[in-house]
Amino acid sequence: MIQDFLSMNGYGLFVWGSFAITFIACGLLYYKTFKTLKKYEREFAKEINELSSKRKKIVTENSKIASQVFSSFSKTI
Amino acid sequence: MFKILNLSNIFFWIEKLIGFINSIFFILLLVALSLALIFSPPDYLQGDSVRIMYVHVPSAWIGLASFSIIAILSIAYFIFKIKNIKLINKSIAPIGLMFTCLALVTGSIWGQPTWGTWWAWDARVTSMLILALFYIGFISTHKFITDENKANKISSIIAIIGLINIPIIKYSVEWWNTLHQPASIKLTGESSIHPSMLMPLFLMFFVLILYCALIFLMKYKTEIIRIKKKNLKRL
Image (tube, rainbow over all chains, first blue to last red; front, side):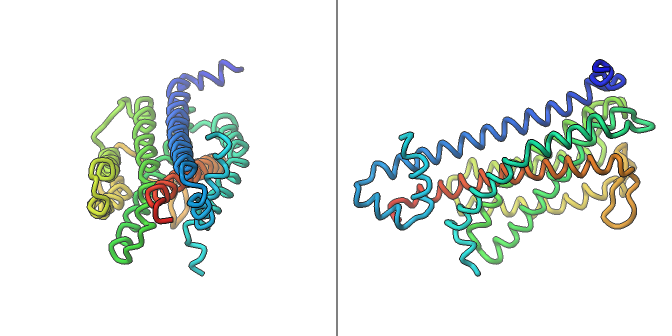
């Protein structure tokens, strides 16, 4: 039964190949996008961390985004 | 009313949306795959090879829709000069390119058992290939032109010119004698596809749309952080 399901009446290679290519491509794009996002978040948090404490306070108070990114990455820096 | 369009508010909603999509995505994917690969019937003529449709058709729809959105937003960019548009377009383009390429590749795989060839210079296939080239042109301008304003202008022009190709793709199967079959699903009029195949098709489309939304939100978030990082001194 499993063999029938895998062979898809002789079209298995085409069907599984198409699904595999689609999901591998989707997985790779997800991985690349996720990695780039985390890289930018880390770099941004690092730049905020390198500011003087007075400036750091101003930046995190003035920008919700900066404050959010910094707080989520401050433990890992 | 425009407070919601503020980048900080958008950023907050992006976080929420990413969390929501992540929570439902895998369950829906599992259901869609079960329907597409197990429960949907084989075609009376094409047999099980018809299951390729469940990845091929949604990919082609997403490729076409993404480019249409990019082109319409590019026109809006020229008229209203809203800076947010360029961020949206930059985030959509890679998704559109990937799905256009997937439509071409899965179409080619489907072509072998049904047409007896991996590739044919058929009107639909060729116009889809041209769409992929427009995407490459659009993305390349942002990659290789360092002046952002110039890159935005050139990429917008590419998108607007590429918009001409969209109706050509849509009606190519009617205008020319092609190997590719005419549309089975019509916006106006009755579809010639059975509901037992239509349901998994729409579900797969919905799952892939969710995936696109997830990638778009992550890319958009990256772009927002990139801008904030660049303007850190001004904060």
